[in-house]
Length: 228
Image 1 (cartoon, helix red, strand yellow):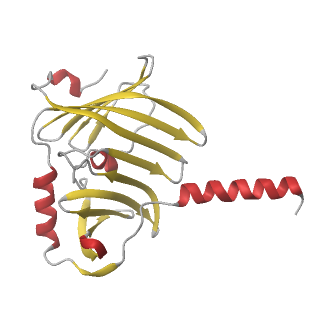
Image 2 (cartoon, rainbow, N blue to C red):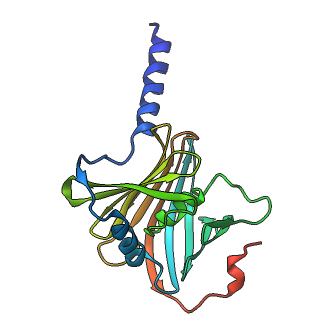
Image 3 (spheres, rainbow, N blue to C red):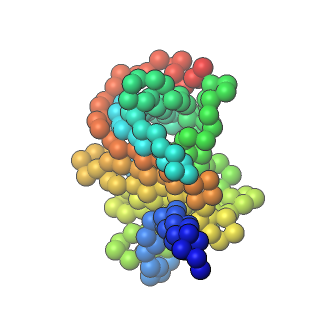
């Protein structure tokens, strides 16, 4: 192999390795007894419990192109979330609202920045299997973790990994292979995670959210759930 081709081969191998790695998969040690009850308890313990504002920093890496800035998440029961991403100079990048399982964005807004609806709630540490999925199995994992496996009606599976009452990761599988994942870092001091990383292995996209502050808020203006 010539020298230039060898360098290209090494670069492509490194890129493939970077995008191919995901959350470490823990060994299965047995089935979860009462998986449906475990799921119901997680929905209660991770649900949105009051109006909350979260300020965060974000970084987007898409096939080597990078953007970064700050953002605000406004969250309200039962399942409403508004996300606004800005560049460091204050310029708006995207605004979106997640109401139940519907992602609402202004006409013409880029649809390739935020995770899909399946994974949006997971980035906030909320356990919410989307409509159209069904629980098919639960697995006890090493280190006291559990995996709850949900099947789509027409494609693939969702795998939630949970531990100590928190969502730790979510994977989307198609044809038995992971195509997207979210990995969370618990905060240790409250309900919402310290950080969330979303990675799309098909489109080579990674979005990282790093929490800066969390504060209890007054009820939000209902208009924010319909961004324009």
